[in-house]
Length: 326
Ligand SMILES: NC(=O)C1=CN([C@@H]2O[C@H](COP(=O)(O)OP(=O)(O)OC[C@H]3O[C@@H](n4cnc5c(N)ncnc54)[C@H](O)[C@@H]3O)[C@@H](O)[C@H]2O)C=CC1
Ligand SMILES: O=C(CO)COP(=O)(O)O
Image (cartoon, rainbow, N blue to C red; front, side, top):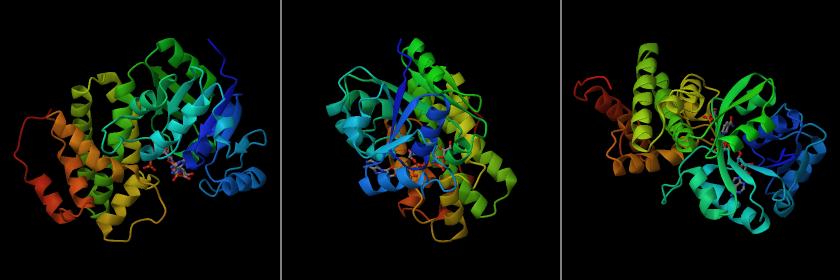
């Protein structure tokens, strides 16, 4: 199997920049693609990306806005927002014809199609090998070299393991699995649940409610995961429970921070991507199609769409019938 000497990171936001740093630390030859040529030129000359302030980009990371050039790498990491992944992979597919791994690093489910990230890659770039990287990892922590561990999934175990070898280092520790769907469900659902927990903290409902909501959130994430064939060790692993714990406990999470602002009745944080907002309506459509109950996610979707007030949604959750814990 190839040693994956060259890596292209597609999307120069906070996460793409952190991942470029990770790949450079692991000894890869790295190219970071930004869609805007001026933005790419500015990052290339200043070695600083305003999306990830205070992090200096290693001198050997090439920054480009040429997608054809980036698409020729031996491994591609896609770090655009989830709803834009298809658009960018469509273009990548016109340039890259070899069967290279394309690793989705976005967390979400596509509107309209209900497709998970690796399904989109499979449709948009049929010659490529889809994989997914997800887990508890704030871009800022990762870029600064603080210890993090994530899950990397591909259908072929040998390939998943080779990708881990190519990207892993002492401070960025990917664990490999073949449970692709399990990994992508965790990353998508935890963002929606983090908004709910942020709202409860913003409303000062207390630490006990925060723990209860996170746990019941995990119950519904697991129900959907099981219905879609995820393995229980994935759901309780880094990309499931691990990422849920991180984002439901820290205002550093943009999803949690959005919930916090909503709960406090404050303006939402400006210019911050909170993927849970896009994922919430799709997640509940997906759950309904599987006859899976996701009351916490439904409450988030109804608050975000204006169908429910926060107080009505909280009251709705607290007055649900008592039942067995499952
Ligand atoms: N920031 C973090 O700590 C982590 C983020 N992620 C995931 O990574 C994905 C990206 O998040 P961030 O980098 O944090 O967001 P960000 O808001 O910092 O950056 C998003 C980037 O995508 C680019 N972009 C937007 N639309 C595009 C399009 N149509 N084509 C190409 N590029 C486009 C933007 O120019 C921007 O550079 C999200 O799905 C997020 O959930 C995953 C793990 C950690
Ligand atoms: O996915 C993340 C951490 O694992 C980042 O969380 P936010 O997108 O909520 O900031």
